[in-house]
Image 1 (cartoon, helix red, strand yellow):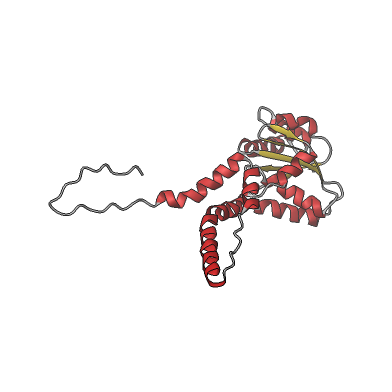
Image 2 (tube, one colour):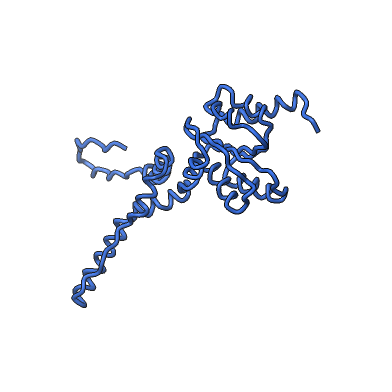
Length: 220
């Protein structure tokens, strides 16, 4: 059923609101994909916080006008499904993962952080670990000194008992993957990791009765 003027205005407003809070948009052709497969793709996108919608390109261009995604207008050609996400990686990852199992979904372009992406650029963005994966890896890196100390102590004990030193491994791969992620994603993950420590206020010992103290309290 054709859209009337009010329907079109509502779609443009809805998509425009999504673009206003987005960091990444990915475009993909979906010719020949069965409805049930598209339903699965939508469910996956919803789980990852990705706004996924088949749009008329004329309406998508209107919604993108005046936003950082306006440069995508020239790529809005053919039957397209649009993946829009506030997370810098999510939309690329959802569509790329689906394309691995459904060759009829063809990624055509994208835009992240004001930069146009070709197909290779979208795939490269999709290969970066997600926030949850980064959080897990960052926690592993932060806990590595504790693990290393345990291994050293174990090695010392083994050396005393058997006279053979035990090797100690460093978590190089995890550090490399964290470093490869977008800076703002790593910063957000670091902030989340540090939050519990920041919320724990130090408890100062009360001075004994009849005594005075000139010590300056530590900054929180």
